[in-house]
Length: 313
Image (cartoon, rainbow, N blue to C red; front, side, top):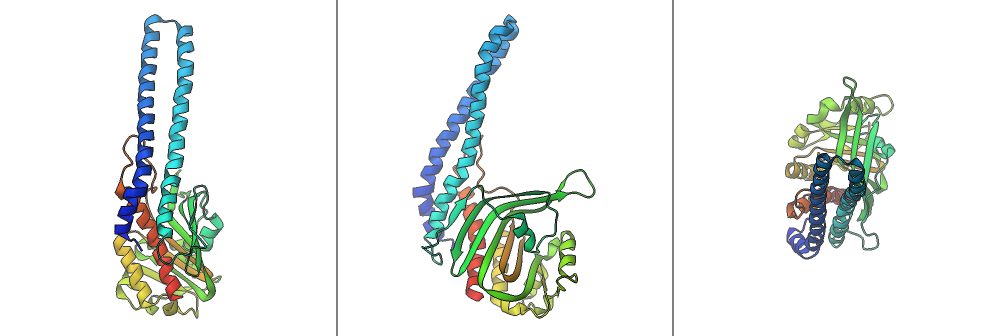
């Protein structure tokens, strides 16, 4: 699904010119800000030398307003950079196989999955006093409709006056056309100490979930992930050997923690990503193929997972 040769060509002919245009805009803003601060410093020195406050105020007030305008332009640059690049990336991904031409990928910089959807996944149990979801992408692969977004959830720490990270990364909610019998949650084993509440909730009287590692045939998958399911759930039918191998490939490619859950027609995927993707720099160049490629690969990762399940379910 990555189509790297095609993507390199698309980057050079479509994305790079847009990046270059925005790079010129960034350089102009940085130059104007630098010059404005130099002029402001000269004004302050001039006032200290003359000691005439009225004249200084008359000169500095409009200049400070102009600096404020430049900072607004910087903020506007940051807010438009990502949508401009993502829209182009989605055009590239949309032209690939498995995507419905009648249901093109769409992007909403302000959109995102709700806290209720995040919690309904059962992957995390948290109050999430801090919850921000943005950069939503919607689409359909095969028969599966999905929405994904960048998401950050934090909760008040019980031991210090601060917020603890619960999850930061890409979160996806997809809908199968037919319901699945039972409920499954797959957690990274190395994160077990942070998942105590989620495991307790899943194994409580409400869900009656049990450890289903014995139904996993792949020993490496069993070493890296914990699989829990409700009674009478056909785990091997939902997570066959081929799917386990595919998830392992994704894990080895990215070295990022991957979480899954299945219930009824709902399918959730959470992939950790510690940094904000495609957030532009102000004081250094954004002309980076690797920066754009990383974002494309992260999006492709979750889309490939959806595609795998569309083929298996």
